[in-house]
Length: 76
Image (cartoon, one colour):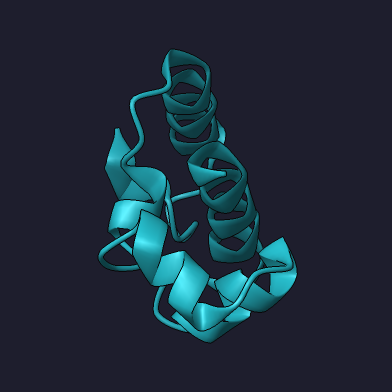
């Protein structure tokens, strides 16, 4: 479940930007309730901090290939 939340969060952060994406947005897109989101993640920042090498590599690829204005650019 945590990996699915993380993937959903990354997709929304890419599309809408980190600041514009809310926990409610992530929960709705992942098909879970706000309460379920918080059972798995303490914050929206924590949603992408999962111990998953594949997801980490994906995030770093996005950051590396992103334009300077991309919301995930500062991850690298």
